Length: 408
Image 1: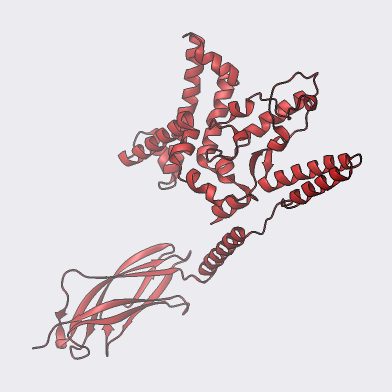
Image 2: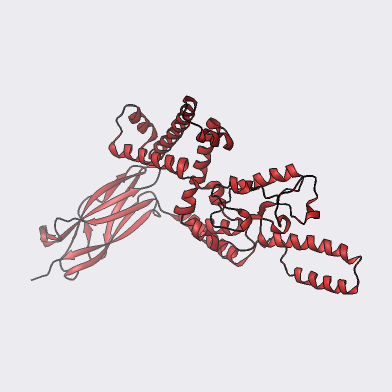
């Protein structure tokens, strides 16, 4: 729900800045730039014939990539195997087959996805790219091209006034397309392939600096605000024209201003979908915090012994055997009392007190006995009660079934 909320408000923040695919791709690209140089140098290197220099640069780049990929697989497996133990096993070549498999698997996945597939994963494999558009509206902060200011596009000499030629600020250099990792033209409008990385913004701002135009032709903005700004600029021009216009022109201009006044101003943060997502997210967060604050650090699992449903023991009593798995999640050891209820004179004829170490568990065999006349033949519902001896609030009740045989 946080992903939906942030996407509605500010577009694909996850894709552009926090997704592991994006982060690892940026790491691998940085390594590539450090070894082979900038984009033009890399293109020249790829097109150049085989040489020792080319072999050396490619080998160094891929060696670093493989090291980072394997390190990623190693640290991932370290979540499940103590990292110091795993490291010692690795340097002594004693890792288990499964550990070795997962290190190599995640290393290969990182190497392939970040080194070669890159944004193709975002375009063709990630489901989020396909449905994130339904969370957008005209007040979502996205990367957008200001067509009101940029069009009509066209190249021009720096000595020529663009306005005199009827051209917009876009010089049609194509750099925004060249730097886009997914290969789209942001000037064509919103497209699902856009991951919000802002590479086109940086490239366009540099061009605007060189030609002496204001920056932010491509920028983070909302579609409504882009239209609003265009309307304000248009009104400023119209106001200047009105000073020298005749009456008919004034009437026409007033009608134009009335139509542009309908365009929304600024960004509407409090919108129905934003409010709904926020309420759901806050509710889920409150429930999570409430459950954490009131949780009991005790879990009990009751399993029936598979040896026999029931058996007759001394004094004609009927016995069922259960196995209780008692899990103590507390950071200190605890002692628990075991009891059972549900039938008259039902009792546990075995260990009724058990001690469990901190953050540990213990399996206890409970032999439960009762008079055969205490219930009906077949299944009878009973309840096991496990309670801490030092704190009555730490208590669990678990349902089970006591089986009484048919009486002759």
